[in-house]
Image (cartoon, rainbow, N blue to C red):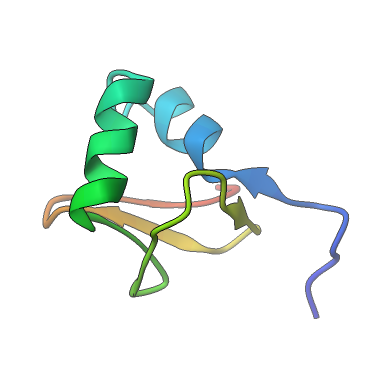
Length: 67
């Protein structure tokens, strides 16, 4: 069971890990449906992530949150 208090914000994770270069690129990718978390397309700008979630941008950019 995931602890509700321990979460990450998708925007911060993808910028800090250099998956996207800017907030504008992040917004564009969200609008295009190019960002997935655990194979679910993300449509909200501020999405909570938990340790172990898999973030995929396009076909080639993937990270595991918290590792």
